[in-house]
Length: 353
Image 1 (tube, rainbow, N blue to C red):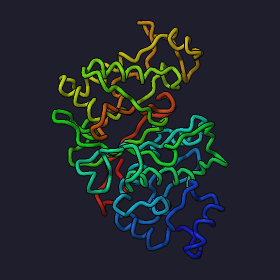
Image 2 (image 1 turned 90 degrees about the vertical axis):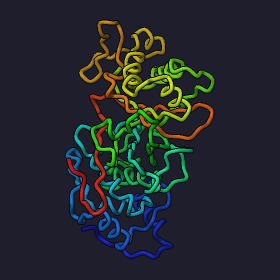
Image 3 (image 1 turned 120 degrees about the horizontal axis):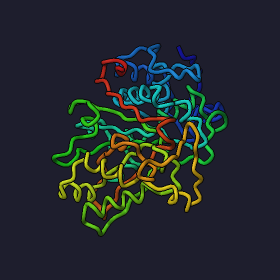
Image 4 (image 1 turned 45 degrees about the horizontal axis):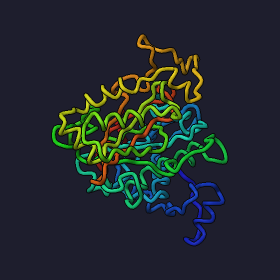
């Protein structure tokens, strides 16, 4: 059980700052009553183990998760989403220890897919990756606070980020119901239509994709290809994963053009293969190590994503002039892969493996 300290409301912020328990922003005081409300809503006990990081010899208990979720500003109804995301983060395939300590400065990016996310307070439309909505902001923030306070990945200690980016405060995108004929992300990943899923990726910050005048699917996909093959992105030519946030105009153009989600992924997998000469012209040195073997395939090219399954498509954002976003993972799949978990209904306990 966590140790309690007694502070006045006025002293909480300065004491927590001094102890290094915050991300630099004010926090909600994690009183026993607030922590208990989180645990009760999710149907978990304080000592339930949400996940473990063996390299750290650390366990994330439900109580520690709840404390940090309160500090982040989550409401109890958001806590099952936090639990599922933390469970995904602790999956060995995600490579949590590397992701939260690397010099690459990865965000803990959460993609939420559910039929009625708005009822939980998630924003799926206007300013989908921006501020203004409590659920979007606080669930992602809870992830980072757990990484700091439970796993020790603070900027002053084990977080080795050379640069970092604002997504390391919080980074979450919630899926807008896709257009007719397209399955939502959770269904594509093997879950039921009525489920809520969370997919956690270790990512760079989002890259805006602008194509405002070309109304053809081929034109839109060519712009996506250009964004995805920027040589300055570490995973280009090394086989990483990407999250594509398809904005209103772009997805409408693709749907009306008869493109399926699978066809889009297959096209981009092939179109984003690059030659060594293309990368070398941008100053990139070819690597031939166990982790990054940049030996071209029989076509003389290198894979930016190794298969269509490494491209995650999510629909979000409101009508505008023609915007989408590209969010690459910070490193090749040999270091980390995205992990998806089902969110358990309120009172149902921990996420199931």
